[in-house]
Length: 296
Image (tube, rainbow, N blue to C red):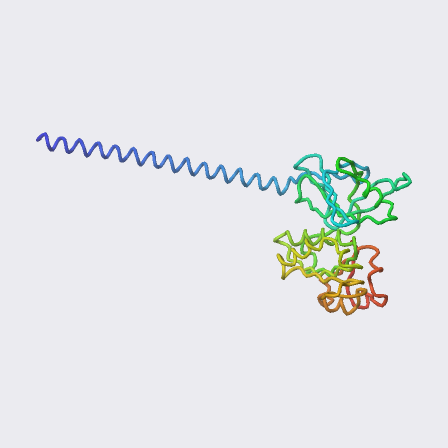
């Protein structure tokens, strides 16, 4: 055999060996990548399952008061402020069921103990803290306590409290009626519904106040109407409206309910806070309107 043929044959054999080696390495690389992808999928799936089934335990105690540190106080108006309280750790949640409230303990101007219910505007998706929006009345006993609170002070809290418990999609739509600080439980339920992509419940809110300046959380409510125009609508009612005003005037009336709420049905409920009578027209009767009403 000639040297040229021998050299060509040896070169072909070498190329074949190199090709086989590259194929083997490529196969091994694919197997390693596949194993890595599978491992990531298993770990990720396990973490997601753990998140869904092992949610952090809430910090509340229904029987005993626990103290939480005030870390930020934001004045919204001359008599309204947002109070932010730290939870034990940055991963802690308050553990308050949607639609329920907490009991807060303080001292009035005479130093006597006072306990009053409040509804946080935050949810358990707000990790590590909770917030209260509080209107402080001149003669309010608990108002005095909040008015005197400064960053670094502690608030005694226990809960959950309340009869109403919300479950996603339990009704087709809610008609909500709120007045003054009664907006906080409505805001809590509204946020929970709108921030859950699986919850298709519609919300129609009528919110009554004395003056424009009394409207709490207006910026947040208006933002929600922009983000969820087909799911959330709000109608403001004022007893003393400004000169330019396109909302309702006076007390919440039967005509307002009929105009801004969906028609009565078994899957439509009206929800309102306690002391709602002060903003309702004297002749308004939800039973006559054939609505199923619940209190928050």
